[in-house]
Length: 328
Image (cartoon, rainbow, N blue to C red; front, top):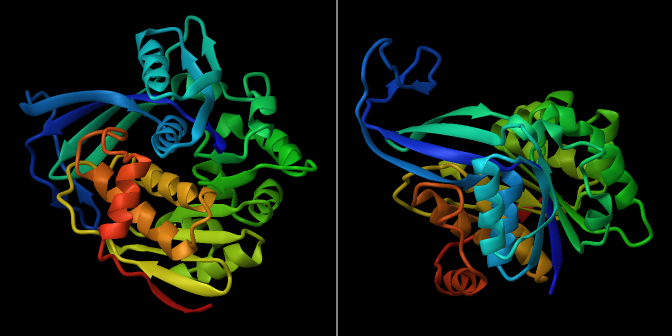
């Protein structure tokens, strides 16, 4: 059984389904407006556990891996519920630090017509740094999944780089975000991490910002040239692209009734990682990611729709999803 460690944030989510019209702004972005002083009726309220590290750890556990999570929660009720959820999902919590008298990360997710706005308080996620990061647990893993981290947590990059240069380093899936994207692919630590990454996953907007290029294909070429073994760019309903430097593969999006897109990227990356852990080829990994992502967006919450290994293998075998490939 492969041992995995997911590093990053843990967040307690409260989803508020608002019966409200979504409008298009002048710049083409979508928005919905709430009048100040008004009382807005809601259709339903759903709570659940989330955060990149928790989502990918739960996803990998359901897919048959021995999964662990590394992050920080508070000693409050939200932190307690997140720990209990991980334990229920057979995820090791030994790498999680509990901080007394501080608030766990919490999000209110406003949903309207499958669109969302997330109001987030990072809380204890900002406390993931050298002192609270269990580097020995991560170093002993077969595969590490590094999720978005708070800008205050970038101090752990040195520990991760040291771990990746050991004699028998773990494989790495990296989903950079925030300040890492802003610093760009050529920044010293980013460049070193990319060069040691097995699977680098970003969405289209992140890929363009991270590489400084204007198109998905250009961004993929920059990431491969920087040393990652596999580069992947997701583009929502427009599908996903991935390359190992020999071919570029495109996988279309599966038709699905979208209820909530929270956690879709984590589900996609988790299933791609599982496929690579199991020795499957890159087109199959793309199909697995697409299938898991489609399952997650069909329900409210980041984790309820995550598939098990039996479910995803059955879906791969039965799916007519076709991956298109061309020379790199």
